[in-house]
Length: 180
Image (cartoon, rainbow, N blue to C red; front, side):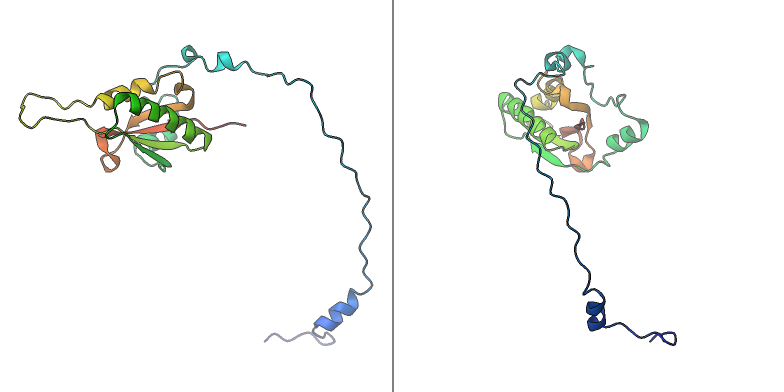
């Protein structure tokens, strides 16, 4: 135990209460809240029609990360972004899958998620046909869907997923950040 210098005594609770017994709270002037600002009409400062025009965006190309800086692009291509949401399109028709992708991208963007995984599947292959190439209709359509005017304003880049996340039957999609 540490020794106190001579002449110093440890303070206890009673001594402390005695010390602060004469302390009084200062009165603060009360400020009345200002009346709320009421606007008769709110005028938009940005015309959203021109901002989200499908022609104003460069089309997304699978694997193209030119819109990202080098470190972010490398991290994205190598699957080192945390996957914040997943959408599995197995067993859906093309129409159902497209609607699900639109809803999924809008929801993830509104929830401020950045990197999402969309699992399309690799397609089917008939066992009795040796010439039949596996063809995934949804897998081939997804890059085009991400260029749709309802989705493109929210997407920065899309790349093929790593084998651990689904390989050529899944895609990493990097969504834009919401700037305030």
